[in-house]
Length: 265
Image (cartoon, rainbow, N blue to C red; front, side, top):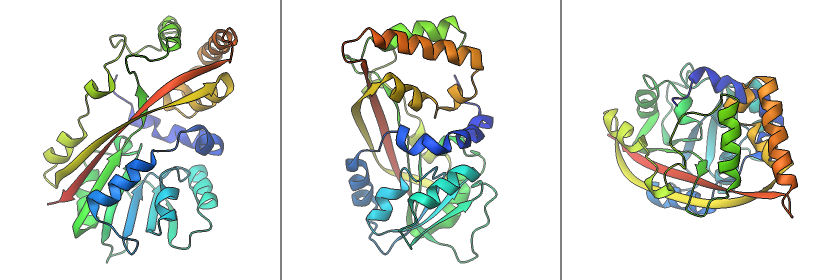
């Protein structure tokens, strides 16, 4: 089901618990990002849609200067709090499309973590290219639910609940394996006419969740934030009921992220 860009403002409602509920990105992703782009600590980075700083913090700890753009007021406030100890990092409250950079701005890397899909496609590639230094790069990645062959059967059970309340997306079940999951990002980069893809990398990992932890995670997803309260209450009741019958009360959720890095043409 295509995502609705109007939902991009919903994340601000989850600002207070987004940082703790969402998973950290794999350390290997950041190592690969640095290796592929060749950026060094003196580089100046621009992050599009930083949220509370989930992807900003690892790069700030490496010593990079970062200008982070965030649409939501509450999320930007959280980001400033989490990044307060890094003098080389600034957080600007704005949508990327309408943000007016300094006239002499030239970034070594523009990147977006779980945010690029929410930016206007008629603007984002051209604007990112215009903001990059001559040998600069654009990098984007997302983090989504992965379904390896041994995925937790809980998700088949709960999918029936989504379908019953009219919140299923109609896609075949189970979803494709991580390696077979289609990803159109590289093709979009190339089709923009502004970038040539340098590398792609996929990362798959698993985390364990209690019912409370998993519901906290769901409360950071736009579709669940915007869901009718009655439907959401029924769904969460069913999650708790099913997990209460497990000896440890936990589920295993697999995650997948695809890093795409491209050079400016």
